[in-house]
Structure formats: C-alpha cells, structure tokens
Image (cartoon, rainbow over all chains, first blue to last red; front, side, top):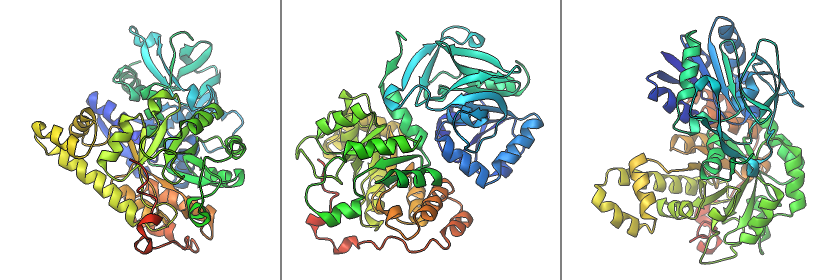
Length: 191
Length: 296
C-alpha cells in the first residue's frame, strides 16, 4: 500500500519510518503530482501556519480536497489536526477543513507545559498509548459525523470522521505503531 | 493529571523535530515577529539587537530585556526562542520563568563562563547550542542540548563558515560510521566527546538531535545550500531584517528551505528580492573579531 507524508515542513521522517515498519511504500510528498495513486496521506506535526501557507502556495489544498472527496484517507497529527479542522479558534490561517471539528491551537500552553502521558485509546485496546503532546492543540467541538476516539481528561485528543483521522499528539515520536496501523485499516475501509 | 510528565527528553527533542524543514528568524520587535510569522517562519528568536548590530555596537552583549521578549511572545502564535550567554544559568532560569519555548545558549552574546556551559538537563525548557564540529556538538548534547545549530559566523552575511562547520560535522559523522567499533573510544578521546554519544552517532549515521545551520545565511540560495549539505533547517539572523525588503526575502528563504532540492523553485523565489544585507567578508576579520570560537 502506498501512503504519502506531506513533506513541506515538520516531522516527516518519523512518519515515513513508522509506515516502513508497517510494510507500506512510504512516499515523501513535495509536489501535488505525487498525491496521485496514494491510498492515504499523513499531514505531519510542524508549524500549522507554515505548512498551511506552503500548501496554498503550491496548490496542494485543492488537490487534496478533490482526492479526499474521491476516497483518499487523511491522517493529521498536531499541526495536521489543525489543518484538517473546519474551524480554528481565533485564526483565519489557511487549512484543508476536511473534518467537522473546531481546533484550539497551543491549547495546553507553551513548550514548558508540553508533556507525555499514558493515554487509553479504546479502539487500540491495551496497553494505553504513550501520547506525546508538544505545544499541542485539542478539539473543542465535533460535528455529528465525528467519532471521538480518545479524550485526555475532558479534552478531545483523537477523533475520526469517515476516512479522516486527527490526533493532537505524536505517535510517530514513539515506537508504538498501533495508531498508524489503525489508519492503514481505515484507509482500506476495514474499520 | 497524575502521571503526565513534562520536560522529558522526548518532549524537548520533539519540539525541534517539529521545526525541521523550516526557518527560524531573528526579530527585535513584535512588528518584525509578525512579518516573520506571516512569511512562514516556524519560530522566531527574540533579541534586542540582531548579530550584525551586536558586532557593530561592541561592549557586552547580554540576554534581551524580558519586556521585549514578552511583547514578542504576545505578538505571535509560533514558538519563541531567546538567547542567554554561555554558562549564564540564571539568565536561563529567567527565560524559563518567562515561558519561552526554546533557549539558545549562544556565542553571539558575551560568554559569562569561560570553562563551563549550562547544565541543560536541569531545565524543563529545551536548549539549542552552537557547534563547529562533531565533538563540540556532542559535548553540548551531553550537557542536555536538545537541538544543535552549526555556528557559522553570525552577523556577517558570509556563508563560508556555516558551510565549513556543517561539512565538518557531516564528515565526522561519515568517518564514525565507517569505523570499526574498537576505534570508537579513541575517536571519542580525540574529539573530546562522550563515548556513548559517539557510539550512538556511529550507529544512527546522524546526530541524535535535530541540527540546523546558522551564521551568515543571507539568500534563498544560501539556505538551500545548507539544506543540500544536510542541515535539518535554517536560522537566519541579520540576513532578513538587514536586507532591503525583509518580508519578501523572508518568504523566499522559507520557500527555498522547503524546496531546497528544486532549482526551478529556487530560481523563481530568488528573483527581485532587492539588496541582501551588505555583509562582512569573514576572511577580512581578525581572529579576535570572530565569535565562533566562544564555547568550550
């Protein structure tokens, strides 16, 4: 299975590594033409303002929206979650807006508040996932078609809408490939 | 929450991973910070003066006024970094209390300690440090730096030292990779680096943390050159706000860093940027005028 990682800026190599571990053909996507033929696309962590501007500048946003409407699965981590959100609190920055969610940026605070924690994720079973939150957002509102997959306290940190998946945290910074494996199952319509 | 852990090595190093492929820009006012963010900077470095002005002013260069740093933190949503003097752990305590996202223990400021750097493990906030070669980089990582930048020669707009230092680091990594394991201890001794880190570099074939290039980058082509030589991202100090059209140049350097291996993009973004910073030829500097030698 061919899965792309949007490679404009951010933690691209870590996602490519996870996908290779799972036996995928992992592609760093630097041009919109490389989106063709992908079963899924990961939008990595990075700075959402930077990635969003570069996506718009090079015509990624329209192409990704078109392919997503035709069944391309998309998973966003951290900055990727923000770019998948239809609404971003207090911001007019460029985005894909594929998921009916509202994202709150830097919602846990600045870097000194960044943390890691064992996070129970029911769809992955035991043990809990080691979730790394770095200047992370969370989801403050979900639309009716959105399934909440994990909360940290009362905050939504993992959600799914059809073939779209968004996490506030970074599984790619750990050795645990279960959430990536879940995304691959989602991409082929098995969950 | 009871079991959440802050300031772990993974969290410190992780923020630098998120900055990869991006440009970190020196700014001295909230207005400049907004221009940088609008241009697509992944972070800003809050300063009282850019390195070119520090060089011109002479005297003792210290941590910036916390009021300036706070104003910049309020102006943008991207991470804000700030500099402390080498070894000045109290300036670092102050920046941590302010809540800056990364501390640069920097040779651009006047060193406060001529033997010891800060014990960076003692802080929750992550640190970036400068290095001219692999040994220096690994000593800083040993002290707790979660990110490295090659030093170059700050405030000159001359990329030659940035190239020298990045090539030195990359060459030494390649050398370690090809070395039989029994020679690694002597290599560690020779470069005055912690043995465990030398072994890790030999195994990984790269530094165990993110490595940006800095010190003299003034054009989109300079940025792409450093990326093609193996940098994970770019620091631009004086190069943007000492140029004729800072906003356009900032945007062009961001695009050049993202598409560093695409000459068609580099050609397009390099057009019509106005004059770059005038700069200083490093070869004309006396040894005591170079700041790269600060750090031990």
